[in-house]
Image (cartoon, rainbow, N blue to C red; front, top):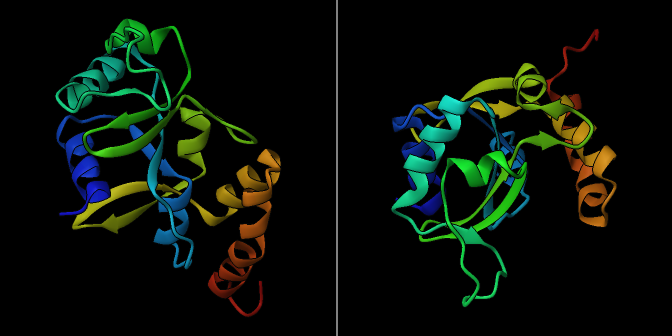
Length: 162
């Protein structure tokens, strides 16, 4: 089982409310884009923060590129005090996003998502329209470079008379 699949299963088993965004979402829609981490937008309710911290605790989450000698405590309070976290874990790199540029918080991202089967699970995945909006808003070179492919994939999904 690959790390993305293992992480998605873990989050699903813990009933974490999340939407897959970023590279894994792009790949799920048929892109050739390669990614090395999992980006998810997560609900910031207290109960979801508890489920999320419990799900990842055994996998030693730490801020990516954080000095090893600096203390870091992974718990619900840590998540409450921040919004977006870029983590290194035993499962690989995971980006936890409380908000997505161009779309907003979890509820808005979820409204812009679709359910897709991934690894035998039904997962909330940011739609092509949502991905295009987010990538344009982020405006980073790597985001802008993937836009033509996302727009082509969107065009392929449209009905001939749309």
